[in-house]
Image (cartoon, rainbow, N blue to C red; front, side, top):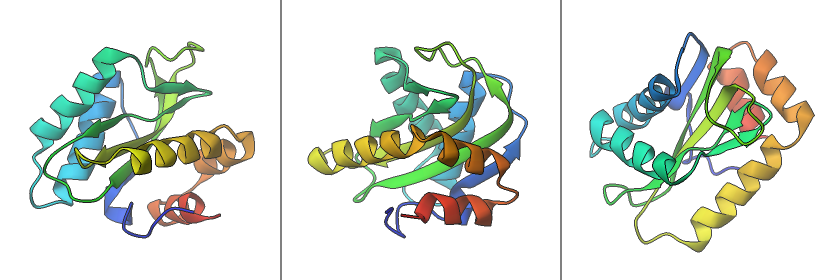
Length: 149
């Protein structure tokens, strides 16, 4: 189960028209930065992009888990985007991504970060979970699905 502090409705994009991986990462960066006083969209985008250059965070089945360490946060925060159609994301399976959950973690976080990534990857590996997230009709519905055990 996800912590209530991890994600909120203000950091969820629902039914967005996004045409590229770059724009998807920019949108996630905006959602994260707009809801945090010490973050800027540009710095968050750059950190997500740096991580992406190490290798695609596309998990497969239309899901991506972009993430980065950043000194401006003291606890893990997340944002989620559901797009109307998938974007080319260089995922291992070649499928376009239409569900993306971004994480920012403190620079010192290690085990917590890895456990959260593993938990999310496990949740998104379930086809029923992906289908429900794709069918969700609002940010509230998405948040309820993400927080469900």
